[in-house]
Each structure stands twice: as C-alpha cells, then as structure tokens.
Length: 327
Ligand code: DP6
Image (cartoon, rainbow, N blue to C red; front, side, top):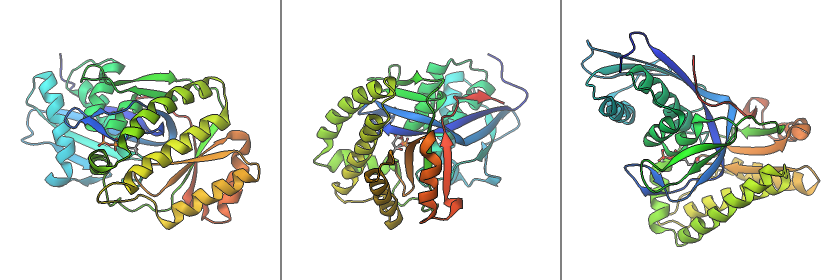
C-alpha cells in the first residue's frame, strides 16, 4: 500500500431515487431498512481532490473554495478517520471539493459528495478498492452515496451488515431516452436534514411498517417496468413511492415536511399535464425541489409548460449520467 504523492481527483454524479431510502436499521453503519433504486444524473456532480501529507497536523477541508470550520468539517473528518483506520495510517489530508449541485436543497449533494470523497481518499491513501468496496465505503458517509458509484439505474441492496449492504448496477449503459427535469423552486438550506428526518419517521410514524412492505413490492415492480421500457408504470410507481415517503414526514411526531408552496404547484401542474395526455411523473427528496421524469420526445413540451410558471433558470434538464471516475 503506497500513499499517493500527488493529489487524487475523483468525480461522482448525483442520483435521484425512484424507490426511496428513508430510514436506517443501523445508524452507525448506515444500513437502510429497505433496498432502493435510483437514476444517476449527468448534470449534477462533485469533483473532489485528496492528498495525505505528513506535515499536516489536522485535516484541511475546502468546499466550494471556502475552508470549512471544524464544526462544518466534522462529517468529512469523521469519514477520513474511517479511511485512515482502513489503511492503518495517521496522516491528515488536504481535501478540495467543488460541488456542481445545489447543497442541501434536495438534490442529493451528499450522494455525489461522499461517493467522490470515498473514491479520492481511498486511492490517495493507497487503498485499492473495487466498486463494491467503494460503494460500501461511500455508504458510511451518506446512504444515498452508496448508489453514486455506478451510472444509470442502480439498486442499493439493503443487506444486513457492513459487508452485505452495497449498490449494484441495474442498467448502467442506459439506452432509454428519458430525462429528469429538475425544478429548483428553492435553493436555500433545508430545515430538517435527511438523517434526522428519517430517524424521526422510523421512530414515530405509524405507517413505517407499511412503508417497508410497500417498498419491497415497488422495487420488484419498477424493475420489471424498467426492463419492459414501460415508462408509465415506472413513473407511476416512482411518484407513488415518493409520496409515500413524504407521508412518513407528515405522519411523524413532531410532524415536518419538505414541501413548500411551489413544490405543490409543480406537482399539481404535473397532474394536469398528465390528464391532458403528457406522460410525466414527479419525485421529491428531502428538499422542496421537484424532479420530473419524462421521455426525451416529450421533454421540450414539458419545459415549455413549466416555463409558463417558473423562470427558465430554475428548470434544469438532466439525463442519465455515468458512475465514478478518476480525473
Ligand atoms: C430522500 O443519503 O442524505 O434522498 O444516509 O443520513 O446521509 P444519510 O441520508 P441521505 O438520504 C437520502 C434520502 C432521499 C432518498 C434517497 O436518496 O434514496
């Protein structure tokens, strides 16, 4: 095992779950209560460079050109501790991250962030991890990062231990012309982190056991729909699964929600467009932005309709993106 003398840079793209992960069976290992399935996107990604240096007395973390305070850097330092432990090293690192994802606004920046950090830091410290090992390591940073190791449709198999919980590609080289249109209704930091939110849902929502059962069914059904290129069934399942996840926030104690007025406006518009014959389906994560699944042939029509109600710079069209790579 040799520590790299030059910085190692990795790029990871974010992913949006069609079957959501919302709850942990084990907090420390970030083992989920359910398996999930996502689409990796091309437009939103994180580049992270890491260099371990003997002269450093602590980790130095730069995020979007700002040196992070110890409090803000805590989660990253904690992750680097894990990597050091794996490599049996006590060297500190310089970490330089540029995020091409709006942070904490429900576009899963922690997914691309921890996937890129897992890839860059493990290689920089001399660990030679395969993709399965990288996926397991990324999981320790953030659950959704587990899936960002791969491109296209990705399944995170929940497993039951550190070794058995990792992502596998479901369809990596996607030949299906579909888009995910993100409507950025609000770019501000979210009030309730996904970590905390899911913890409250697991502990208090009376619907949590139903959620687990339904996720298992939804996952099975969506895999068949994807294989059959059945866009409507895929979209329907994804939209329902997202709404069920959000019902776990509304039914928690204390209750909370990631919807804001504009999120509801987008959801209503999607329903109206669908009634009028335009096949599109929404999904939402732990933030107010709405992502709409649409076939490429209908993307322009959808964007034109969205532009009647939202500024053009709030609408981003993404398509399927690749897995982790070193730059
Ligand atoms: C709604 O991966 O951010 O995006 O594991 O606590 O870091 P932690 O949570 P995180 O949660 C993502 C939740 C979600 C659904 C999903 O991506 O599956």
